[in-house]
Length: 259
Image (cartoon, rainbow, N blue to C red):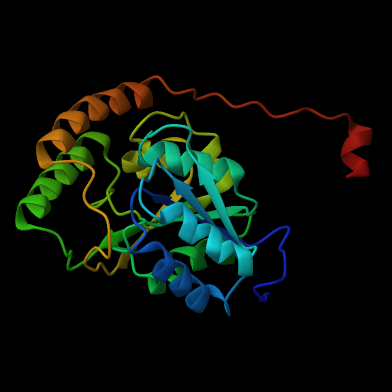
């Protein structure tokens, strides 16, 4: 189903959720890219979740919304980080499928079709819960790539999620499945392990990566490493203590026949 910019969509197929912090130089281009890429493929909305910007990000998003009601703006009440922005955006999303992208433009909009298509094809009857992008030819500094490679290798060995790159911001997932997961800060880096532990199928898709259009990295390698160690052991504990038993409602014979 396609839509025009002035057509208000009550139930889009996909909600794009984009955390943004001082990325005015990237957000308009990112919005245009999503409109071009997804416009003929499926109905959508775009939720920009501002995490405390002090540049023109908010004003530029509101300008976009004046001509296109598919653009929505959320503002975190305080700077809370990427996981909080993704979670808040997903809470407000109208679509059953949510696709996340980094607000700095490093995830090319052309790749959203690769992560969204498997979920759109699967529908609600399948167990596919998450499609995670895996960056190739990363456009980051050597030190950041090496630190990421080490962290991803350690995490994959300990959590057994078979994922080489959980830091990629480009992911698509079932909204209901995501919201059933326990929330914690930095959870966006552990989504494959969390979805897998909850019984959902995950799929990995190679995606491209480009230089940052605006903004700057929110963490140094040292900060990311120290936080990551605490988070990793926390997630290991959480997965060991997760609820395993599920309950199914039992119906009478008459109710079963009525169905």
